[in-house]
Amino acid sequence: MASDITPYYKSSDRAFTILNGDCFELLPKFDFMFDMIFADPPYFLSNGGISYQAGKIVCVDKGAWDKGKSQDDITHFNEQWLSLCRSKLKDNGTIWISGTYHNIFTIATSLTALGYKILNVITWSKTNPPPNISRRYFTHSTEFIIWARKLPKVPHRYNYNLMRAINGNKQMTDVWRMPAIGRWEKSCGKHPTQKPLTLLSRIILASTEPGDWILDPFSGASTTGIAANLCGRRFLGIEQDTQYAEMSRLRRLELDNTDRIQYYKNHIPDFKHTDISQLVCESSVDYGSDIPF
Image (tube, rainbow, N blue to C red; front, side, top):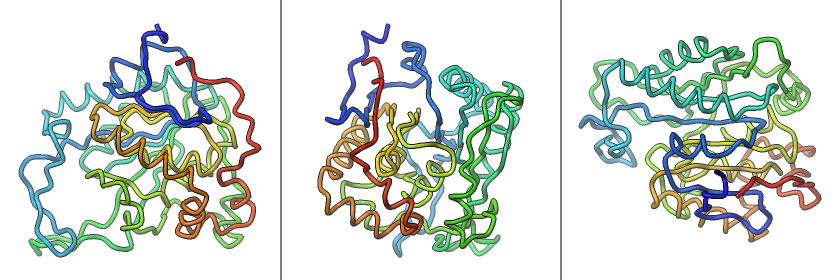
C-alpha cells in the first residue's frame, strides 16, 4: 500500500520527507520501521483561553485539531496513535512525547497499558516563560517530555558519554533549562506549538546514531526534521495541515545554504561540543535504504 502514498515533499538527499495527511490514515499504509519517534500530540486546550505573548494578550486557540474533548475521548485518541506508533518502532527503539500537566499523565497511563517501558520524564524548564497575567497562581514555566522504549527487556540506545560531555563532564539530569523558540527559528513563519531546535537536537543526539530514521506523526513545522538533518539523521514527518507542510518544506530548503547551517549551529549550545559539530549535516553519512515512497 505504500505505493499509494505520494510525499508532499522529499529533499534531494532523501533524508527529509513530509506527508500531508492524517497520521491515523497514513501510518497503517506502510511497514517501514523507525529508530526513534518524537510526538507533540494535541493538548486539547483551545477553548477560548488567553495568554501573554510578545507583550500582548492573545487567544490561546491553536486550531480545530486542538479543540477540547471529553476525558474518555482523549484517552481513546492517545491509545490509538500510541499503538500505531509502537507498530512502527524497531524493537530497540524509543519514543519521546511532549506535553503539559493537561495531557502527560493520561499519556503515561496509555504507554504503560500498551507495553512500553517509561525511562525518564524530562522537565523542560523554560528560561523565558510568558508571565501569568491572572496573578492567581504560579507562572507556568515547564513542559514535560516522556522518554519510553518499545519493549521492557530489549535495551535501548542512550549516548551517555555524549550527554555527559555536553553537560560539562557531569551526568545529565532530567531537568533541562532551555528557552522557548526564538525569533531566529521563525524565518519561514511560526507554528502555534512549535518546539525549539535546542530541545529537539538534544533529544535526537541522546538516543540515536547518524543515519537513523526518526518519525514525527504530528510534525507541525517539522522542527524534529530540521534537527534530525542537522544531526545527520533521516526524517519522516506527517502533517495534516497543508500550511504547515509547506512551512516544513521551506524550512528544509533553507538547509541547502551552508551559511544557514552555520547560523543554526551558532544558536544551539549543544552543537558547540566538538564531536557534535562534526556531525552536523555530515555529507559522508551513508543514508542506505530509503523509505518506500
